[in-house]
Length: 360
Image (cartoon, rainbow, N blue to C red; front, side):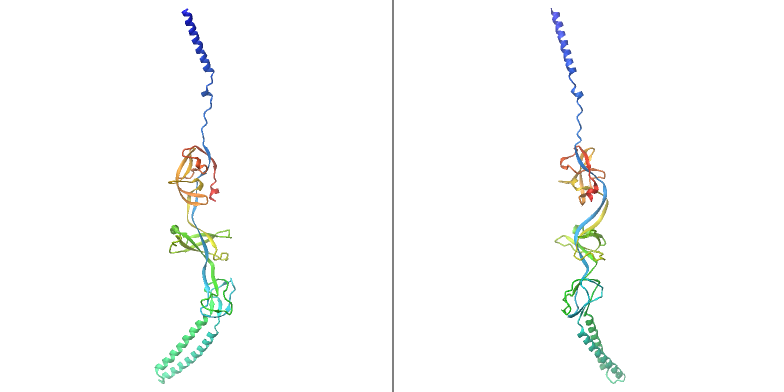
């Protein structure tokens, strides 16, 4: 009886073990059949590949065109205006007679002095003959000499006064609009017309004092005028000797050719002064540079991850900014989604921004 029970227990245990084995075998192996978890590549961002380029260091300023020479034409003596020998807004040569003051009285005075000179010469010659025979004293002869010399000096004064009745151009240039009419009584304080020399012209502009050491005589500048498509060239010839306290700037003057007279004194000019050229500048879109507490930084893709770089910046040109340190040519710089990325975050490059699109 006991043997029968023992066999039954053993048989039951075998059945249970076999059942568990079948159940385990029939159950699918979840570990073996499930696919591997995907590796995250991060967000897609626009990038810019850093390259070396030519960068001109430019100082921008505004200024005005001035006449190379400018003078108000006025007579040297008072009198009636009897001639006007120019057309308004016309070109006149140096030395041209522009106007004439009435000189009839002076001419009459000169004629009288000429007669007196002739008489004085005759008296002196007669006295000289008498002096040879001691017929007159020496002091009388010298008195007659002095009288003749005084008359001749008066003649020279009158001739100068007559010459001053003619108003001449001190240099070649363009006369403006006349201020007086024929027959008017004019004095040295009254301007008859304005004379300007417009070829060449002067360009005057202000430069901040921090650029003082970069401005040199002989330096080339370019400027643009409203209404003209092409820029013009000028050459710096002088700078002011002091800084204006109110603006902390100093004046610079340059000269530009104006043979056709297309430019006019008073034209407003936008000026560019090229102070140097960097043939190996690294330029990035300014949107790629992020300001931080201790400076500025950019994000670079390195081995599929974000790499933060502290950078030092220089000059700007349009939407580009110069990177002085922190970036090397060939670095892939992130220019989009900057608020969504951080150090070592996985990212992948999307659109590559064209350098020329941003620089021009």
